[in-house]
Every structure is written in structure tokens, then in C-alpha cells.
Length: 370
Image (cartoon, rainbow, N blue to C red; front, side, top):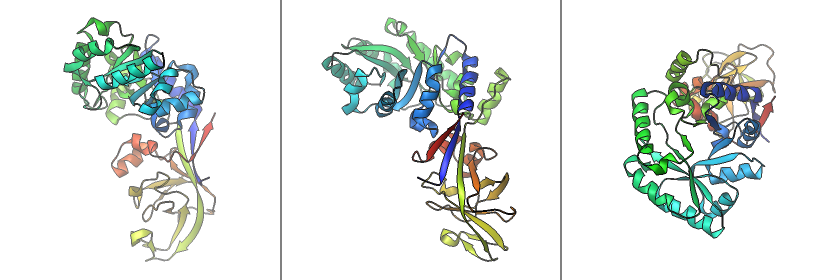
């Protein structure tokens, strides 16, 4: 459908999962996070790939959970953040586990489960310092008691989320201490079977946060949460190696020679300083190639880095290929991966590697390489 596509290494994904399983050991379960199109890697296919290896999968919404069920994924599925009310009965009936972060949502789940004569499984979200969704830790005791009394509702998990486990271990410890204090407050918490807090970074740098379930997001895809987290992790696990799974490619659709002084792209943002050979690529910001990469990005063609010249357009990008001999239209171009790491692109545009891969348009074809 489009002349830009993404290739995913299945062996890299499975390798990364195995690395994290070695870190946490047999007593801790892993919940791969496949939300948001599996961080750009393709939610359905990644879920199918890892589901035989794990008991859990994590998604952001009930809509994503139902999409997994529709594709015959039978693992335990936990919704991390929110659910669509109109699909609630369907989600409960399909044994999807839901988040609770206030009494109102708990009552709605309870009423819906009672109406369809099912038991809804929920996880209580505690806000320990990220200030997103969640029950404030100082209010947790009173609320958990009320939620625990609701009919047709079973609390099977309690969880929180770190705000800065990639970079601020002092604050991470503060959050973990706060979570522990909440768990130790009441007998209601002691009978909840699953406690989960650790993300990819915390799993590697804070073993105390493993509890009995960890949520594996970015690390599953072979990317490091931060440079600092990588350094800290390798001190604890010098054998650890993550393999980036994603390569994003496109093709050259035209090659032309231009004279010195020629303007390139919208806004005449680049002026050729010499006679140049440029290639026009079939990719732009609609596909997810960030517009801020204009005049600073690089792509890989025949193992040589070629700079982006001019602004990235909606569906086209121009690059300088003057140094490549015998270049042809339809030659393959690597936009990301194999020498163009997500971290390098992130640094150029002032963002994080999470965003670089996740924003690749989900309509682009994903090819899964065994």
C-alpha cells in the first residue's frame, strides 16, 4: 500500500524477553507490554509471538484488549490505563482484567459484572508519585476497603508506576517505599495475589521492585530506557545484551543532479553549495518520519550515511547521494535501524527513543523476519 515498510526481527524480540526472564528469575512473572501497536512493532503479531512464553500481556485500553481476544490471544490480559464504557460488559465476559483508580469506576465495573452475572477481575492503581491515574497513597486504605465490598468484583492485583526509574534512583526508592507502606497497611492488601511496579528500567536497576510481576515494555523491543539505566544495569548484569528488533525502510523513487545554488524543498530550506546528486525517498512525516529531521537527519544507502537535505515533506524526503556510485531508483533505504539507531534520531529531534518507534504509522506494512 505504501513504499515504506517496517521489518521486525522475531529472534531479537524472543532474545530480549529471555534476557529479562534471566534477570527476574523463575519466581517473578513477566507481562510484556504490547500497547500502542507494540511501540510501533505491531501489536497483534508481537502478542502472538510472545504469548506462548508468558502468562500475561499488557495493553493501554479495553479496545486493544478486545482486539487481542478477537485474534485468539488467550493469555491473561491487563488493561493498564482506561476502558471504554460501551465495551465494558464484553471485556468482563472475555475475562479481561481492568484498572481501578477511583470508587466511581469500581462501582461501574461491579454493576456491569453483576448485570451479566460475571466476576470482574481488577487491579488497584496506586499513585505513588507519578501524578497520573491512580489513588493517592494516603487515600488508598479507605478506598480499598470500599472497593473490596463491591459485589461481583475481585481484586487480583495492586500496582503503581515509576516516574523516573531511568534516571533518579532517589525518587524511585521514595516511590517504592511509599508503595510498600500502602501494602503493609491492611489485611485487604495482603490477600491480593499480584503486586507489580517495575517497568523495563526498574526491572534492571531496582531488583527490589520486581515483587512477583514486572511489566516489560521498551526493553522487549531491544531499546534501552536511558544511557544511565544501561550503565547501571550492566553493573548488575554484565552479560545482558538487548537487540533492537525494528528496521524501517523505504525506496528511492527519483534521482536527479542539481546545480550549485539550487533550492531544495519547502521554504527553500536548503541551498546546494555545489553540484549535487539528490534522491527523493517515498517517506515523510505522515509515515512518521519526523519533520524536524529536515537538514539534520541521515539515512543509510548501500551502507553509507546520506544526509537529509531540505525539509521533510508529508510523504517525501530528499537526501544527498552524491558520494554513492551507480545509485538507482528503487534502491533500498534504511531510515531506522542497522546503523541508524532510534537513540540517534531521538537526540537530533529532542525526544526519546520510545517516541521515535511508536510514532511510525501503524498503517505501514510490518514484515516479521524469523
